[in-house]
Image 1 (cartoon, rainbow, N blue to C red):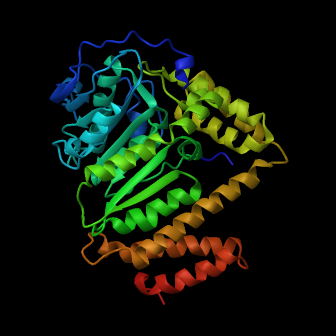
Image 2: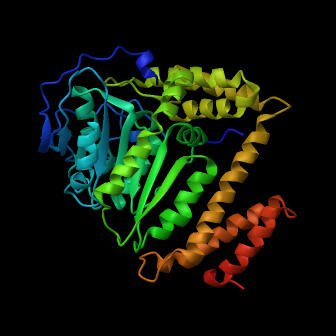
Image 3: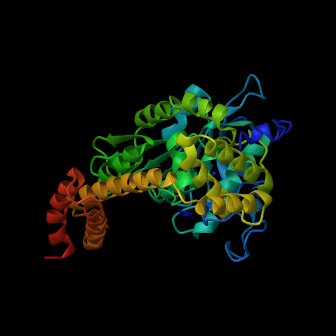
Length: 417
C-alpha cells in the first residue's frame, strides 16, 4: 500500500516588498540577482534533500548569469499580489511576449520570458534557470500563487508541465502550447493537480502534436479530474497561437481562481507564500499536518495516507518524514485496510483514461509528418498492455469490451497477430 505535496503564508510572515529594483513596463533583459530559494531539485527528482546534489547542474552553472524579459505593470498598491505568467520557449531566446502582450496589459499581469532555457539545455539546468527567474521576481514583487501560470512552447510547454505538476503550490495553472506533458507519479501530487491546477492546452489545426494534445493528454487529464480545456488554433501548425486565443485561454485560467482560494482555506499547505519560501522542515510539517487532518476523516483516509507517504518520500530525514513513516507502518500493520478500495479505484481510473487516450492517439492522431510516427508500434504495444490489465481486472465489464475493441485496432500497428 505504501506506494509512492504551504498556506505557508500561515507559517511565514511575508517579507517587506521591494518595488524599486525592477523597472515598470517592458524590459528586454533583467539579470537574476541571486540563486533561487525554490525547490528546483524536486522538479527533476522525487526528493528534496537538505543540500542539492553537486552533479545535477552543469559545473559552470551560475544563477547570476541567467536572465529574463520582464513586463511589470504599473501598480497603484505595491503590496497587492499580482498575477503572473512564466513563459518558456523551445529556443534560448524568449518568444511569447507578443502573443501575451494584450492580455498582460489588459489584466495587469506580470510577464516573465525566460532566457537561455531552450530544448538544447540540460534538464536540471533548464528547470533551475526557470525557477531562478521566477524567484528573482518573487523576491521583489508580490506574486499571487493562485494567479501565477507557467506556460511554454513545444518542448518549453513540456518543461512548464513538469515544473507545474511538481510544484503546484506556486501556480494556479499550466498552459502548454503545441505539446502535452507528463503527470508526476506520486499520488498526492496528482491529487493536488486535480484539486488546484487548471490546464489550458493549445494546439494548431495542422500541428503534428495535435493528436497528442487533443486525443491523448487532454482527455486523460480531463478523465482523472484535472480542470482542462483544449483549444485548436485554426489555420495554424506547430506555431504560437494568436493573441486572441492566448487571451481567451488566460481568462479561462483566471476563472478557476475562486476554486483555488477555497482550497487554500481548507488546505493551507496547497498554496505558497507570496514572496517568502518555506524551509524543508516548515513545508514538511505543514503537509504532514494536512495529511493527519485528512486521515481523521473516513472519506479522505486514502488521500491522507498518500499525502503522508509524499512527506515520507520527499523529506525522509525530517521529523515529519520520520513521523509519517511511523504512521504509515502502523496503518500497514492493520488487519483491515479500507483505504485499499479507494487506492484500487484510483489506479483503475487512471489506467482506463491513459489506455483510452493513448489508443485514440495511436490509431487516429499521429499524422504522416509527425516525428513520432516511428514510435507508433511501441506506443500501440503499451496501450495493449494497459487494456490487457484492465480486461484481466474485470473480464465481463463494459471496460473489457471497449478494451478488446481497441486491441483489435492496435495489434496490426504493434505488429502483433
